[in-house]
Image 1 (cartoon, rainbow, N blue to C red):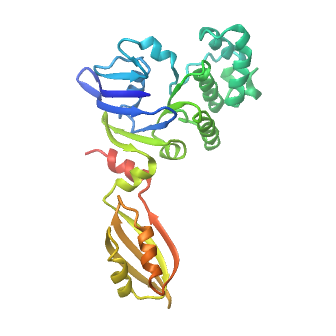
Image 2 (cartoon, helix red, strand yellow; image 1 turned 180 degrees about the vertical axis):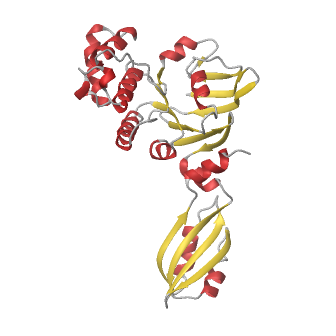
Image 3 (cartoon, one colour; image 1 turned 60 degrees about the vertical axis):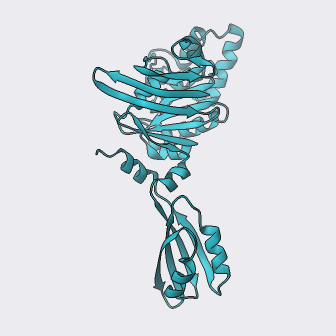
Length: 311
C-alpha cells in the first residue's frame, strides 16, 4: 500500500533521513522505533506531505507524493506528538468544526461525531472544554480528529508520550481496535508500546533503517545464537551432551545437576532454527522424563540498545 524508495532528507548539511527503503502493507500496524533524533518524525512528515524529500520517492497506492500530494493526504489521518487542539472549545464543538473542514455533509456529521466519541472513549467529556481535559483525553480528541474522515491510513507520532500507565493502556487498546480495519504507522521510543501493539517493527538509527521485521523474527535474528532450556529427570550431564549435542543446529550443551535426580540443560543453538521438535524427539528415544522445554530469545530492549547505541 505504501512504497518508499531511497527516501532522503537533508537540513543544510545534516542528513536526517538517509536512503530509507520501506514497504508497508494494507492492514498492517507498523511500529517506527528509534532514539530521539533518529529521524522518525522527519520520516512521518515526508510521508504525510508536510516535508518534501531531498531525494527518493513515496508511493501510496497509485499516487506519488511529487505529483499527487493532495490525493495522498485525503487517504491519511495524522496525529502529531502534540495534538493541535483549540483548548477554549468544547470537545463536541471542536469535532463538529473538524467535520466541517473535512467536508463531511451535515446529515452525516452527527452520526460521525457520535461514532468517534464511542471509538475514542469521549462520551463523558463531549461537553467539556478541551483545556480542562487530562493529556490522555486530549490525545483521544486528537485521535478522533485524525480519524474523522475515515482515512485508510493512520499515522501516529508518539501517541502515548507523557501519558500515565492507565492512559497508555487505554490508548493502546483504541489503536489495536482501529488497526483491525486500517493501516497504522506508530512512531515511538517506548518499546513495550511497540511490542504490545505492532505487527511489525522498523528500527531507525541516525536516519537509517537498522532492523525491519516481525517482533519474534527480530528477537531470533538479532544475535547468531539463542538458548533452549530443559529440565530433565534421569540421565547424566555426559549423556545429555552426547544425545542433545548431536541435534542439528546445537552449538553447545551445558548441564547442571539440581538435587539428586533433576538435570537442567542449556542448549546454545542457531537463532534462525527452532530445534525444539527435534530435541523432544531425541528425548523420547531415551528413558528421561521431560519436565520443561522452552526457547529463550532476546528482549526488544536489548535488541534496541545494541542497534542504536552510539558507535
